[in-house]
Length: 211
Image 1 (tube, rainbow, N blue to C red):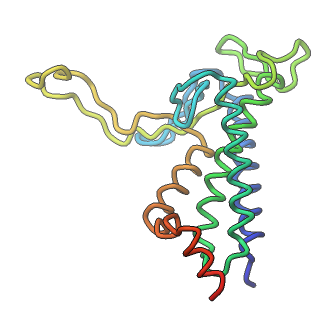
Image 2 (image 1 turned 180 degrees about the vertical axis):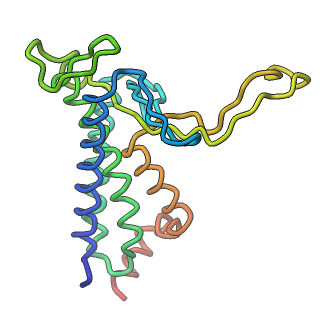
């Protein structure tokens, strides 16, 4: 059974958003802030929260970031709705943009609603869903939940190295969530395999549609 590009996009976006939110809610209600669960030497679950962009980066005003995400997701959905009807656009290209859209949308839910539907207790207490006393923030000001940590390897820099000598280094240090992973995977596959479609000009696009 062949699935259309439109249904593929819907399946990816809805599927990733649901899985992302289920995982975040589970972590939020079962881990206290800063708690970690050791799975292997190179994979841990660590509950942290952040106000910023993907992988915990901080950039700009919180309200601006949330509004920017909403505008970006709206633009991405509009773009996907335009390209799914074009025969020369492969499903993989649509899937990449669907992953990026799903990832951006997943983090929007945190920013919009988590401040209102969760409290923010002092560790080692865990958060409560829909607390009677109300949440920890207002609409647009919730924090993004991250949990995946992959310290693949670590070492100490040699003492003779300037500035960093003797310091401990861990690769890979960022803690991220499923939404961040979806964005990253979508962008990487898009660049590696489908970058030529990004470079199609409006003139070329019209000629391809008329073929």
